[in-house]
Image 1 (tube, rainbow, N blue to C red):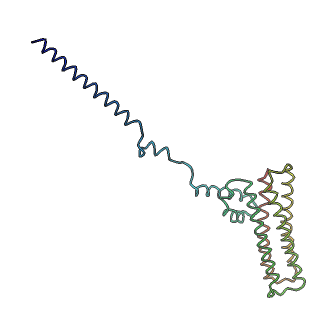
Image 2 (image 1 turned 135 degrees about the horizontal axis):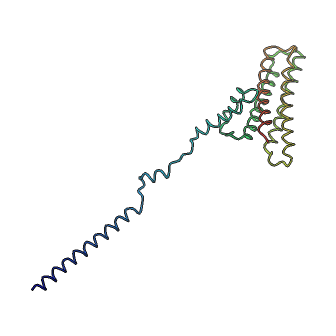
Image 3 (image 1 turned 60 degrees about the vertical axis):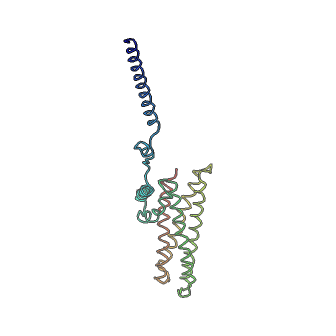
Amino acid sequence: MEANTFASFSLGHVLKFAILILLAISSITSACEDNSTIPTNSPKTNLSYTSNAPSNSTNTNDFKTYIKNSCNSTTYPYICYKSLSPYASTIEADPLKLCNTSLSVALNAARDASSAISKLLNNDENKLSSIGEEVVQDCLGNVKDSIEQLQDSLDAMAHLDAYFDREFQISNMKTWVSSAITNDQTCYDGFDDMNVDSTLGDKIRRRVLNVARKTSNALYFINNNIY
C-alpha cells in the first residue's frame, strides 16, 4: 500500500516537472521569435532613414554666398553679383563654372547691345548727321568685335582641359577679353564731342558701359580663377 502511494506521488511530481520544463522552453522560443525582427515604426528603423544632407535651398544660399564673396574682389561687385547670382545653381562653388558663366553673361550683354544699336541706327525717327551715323556705325562694329572675342574665349573655355597647351589658351583668353573691353571703351569714347543726339548717345553708351563692366568682371575671374 505504501509502495503504491509513493510510486503515485513520484509519478505526479515527474509529470509536473516535465510540464514546467515544456512551458519554459515555449516561453524562450516565443521571446526569440519576438526579437527576430524590428517593427517598421521603431525608433531604430526611423533613424536609419534620417538624412543630414542640406536642402536645395541651403545649397543655393551657400552658392550665392560663394558668388558674393568672389564678386567682392572685382572692379564692379554690385553688377557682378546681380548678374551672376541667378545662376547660383549652375555655378555652385566651382571657379571654372564661375569664369564660364561670367563670360556668357558678358557675351549676352554684348549681343543685346548690338541688337539695340542696330535698331536705333535703322530707326528713321533718329535723325543722325553723316558724322553721327558714322560714329554709331563704328560703335556697332566695335561691339560686334567684342562679341566675336568673347565667343572665342568661351569656345576655348569649353575645351580647356582638352588642350595640350593649356597655358597658351588661357593667355589667348586673357588677350581676347582684354581686347573686348578696349573695343567697348572705343565705342563709348567715340561719342565724345561728336554730333550725335545726346539722348541717343546716352542710350548707346549705357548699354556699352554695361557690357564693358561685365566683361571686366569676367577678365578678373579668368586672371584669378583659372590655373
